[in-house]
Image (cartoon, rainbow, N blue to C red; front, side, top):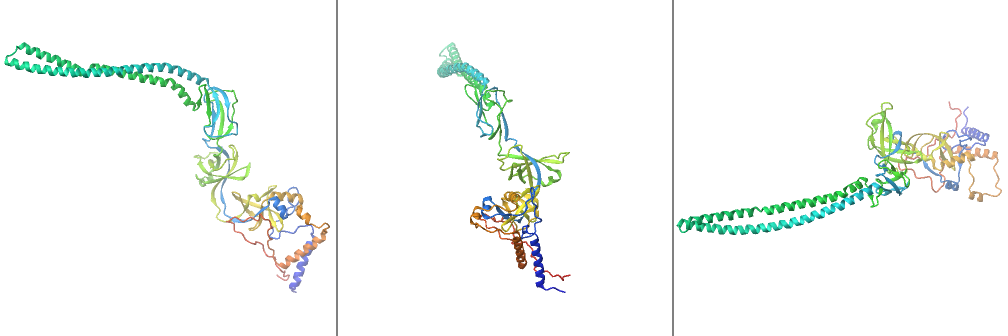
Length: 533
């Protein structure tokens, strides 16, 4: 016999009412989809959802975001160590033997390149300077003498040049006269007017004058004076060179030290790079040895690297210039970015790994020696997957929980997570697109759920507004309320997602690439056909 629809509705409603009445102490289930069994009260499992009024929610800083879909950047994960760049960590040693007179920096101080770090008094420099000054006095005397000889030689040369010019001029005049007389005597001798002997005397005189002219034109005295002048110039130059060499040893030692020094031999040690003082092992008054005694170590923490090992099977996916992300335990909420700068040239024969180095872009909070989780981004997921911010996760004895909004309450839901992309975490199961999860304040809700069994203390405003003799609702009243709720749900014929709590600071606007839906819940049948085969 086929029952009428009204009878079916009545039977179904009665069954629902009896179920609610028989379990008066259970909270109403999530009015959306089923996220799984509720967590039982115990050491670290929340018993039920947490009800929070608007004032308390604002005080706790609770914020929510909807579960959405996005593509993830994924890659190779490995562990590594934070290290400095090869030229960004230096140990400054003592440049010379001496005694520490001043210490100008402390460990932890930031220094700039060229800044004074310490001062050392060096007896060696004092001896070199005294010796150079003593040598300089003697060489300066030699230089003055050479310069005086040069002046005399120059004057003698000028005098010899003038005398040679005058002698040549006089010899040329006598030569002209002797030639004229010889021509006349030669004409007269041919005419028989003079004796042959007179012609011979004229010829001999001409030869003598010619010899004198040749000697005058040779400028022998001038050449000798010129040679003396050149010797004097060489002597001056040699004295000047010795004068420079007298302090060259001292100056060369200063250049070798790459530091400035006072007349008293006080040497200033400067920072070769900018950075932070990591160590200062010396003490005031300590004797130091050149190139062996450390003064300070400086590390430039603004430019750090991470060295890690990549398995041989993943090597084909790694290339120079790829983006990387890194995290350290001391800063779990901070992500550091950078790029791959070096890839090793050889695979280790035993471990089958190859070293990879990534340079970080902004590593100021990190310290060399820290261990880091390194992810080399090699691909992007082709499909859009469900994601939530990592701040929404609560670790409960190894389980991942999130708090999902359910009307005015927040229900704890266990989820399974997958890949990560920065602060976004992939959801493999437990949530649906469009669920509103708590992204800030989840830990406070978790603690409240453990302490209060799903209830929070009323706010001050609520206490003031409450009537003084407000009646309490007995247990059977909750049962009737449950029956009424069941009948209302039955009459509506479907479940719909609850409205978002009216907090001013949430729900947050979803990210631009999140595809949200308004509802994901399935409708509940409005009637049951008992004769259905």
